[in-house]
Length: 93
Image (tube, rainbow, N blue to C red; front, side, top):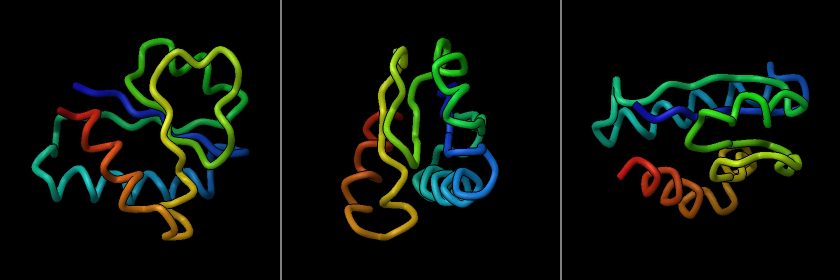
């Protein structure tokens, strides 16, 4: 089971939008039930990433994050989305 931490400024609005898109991506590629998504404010990301596989954030990764980082901005803007999707799918392999 892979653990994804989805973070934004407050852990509510943009992280929810990105979480939905990441879930859809993973489910469409056959990973339903093989991942867990935790949403949080970016200020709590390092703590949640201690036992996570990847941080997907709409901000810069904070100091102390020990898991892989993928920018969540492409899931909001569409620019660079294909590359971000490839990164996430590679982490599931």
